[in-house]
Image (cartoon, rainbow, N blue to C red; front, side, top):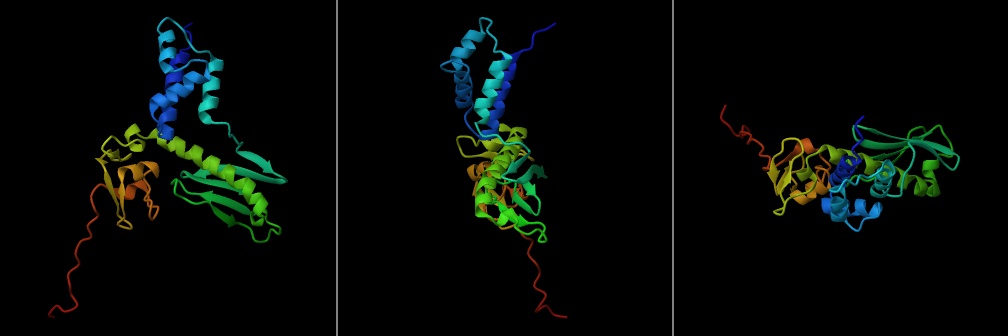
Length: 227
């Protein structure tokens, strides 16, 4: 029976984390190595060359460190109020009886506090103390969803090159300037990468981001045209 290649797992985890967070790969590799007792990734790689392999416990430790200390269940309680976390088309929802916190896919999206059932008296979403406890959970979930999106995209879509050019995650065009066909806003490749290819001005989706200005066809002036 072939032994499981945990070293391959470790490399994949570091690469996925770098892609999801937008961090430099060597920085993530260093954190991963230090989590299991090495000074840096080079020391880990040197030991691997002479047969060393991380263990399943090492992998779990690295995942914990790279993921961060915060972690919330998809279903839980805030005081006496139950909540559920999910995402619909990559938009995050935190829901309970009569209330919902909605956060859009784009990092620039602001949380919306929604009342979903006005028949429910003493709605916790109207309690500032409850909201103060609920918002960090909803934001944490949104961060996880965005990390999943970034992992699915090419590295250059979330990490522009030295000239500031970012690769569109859908059509793979590279440019240092991008234009929104909804609001005509102009954004840099860095802005696009940081906002997951949503317009930082109007929130339009990646489908609406173009590498050239969107030209509206000129309409003929018929008002004064002869009959």
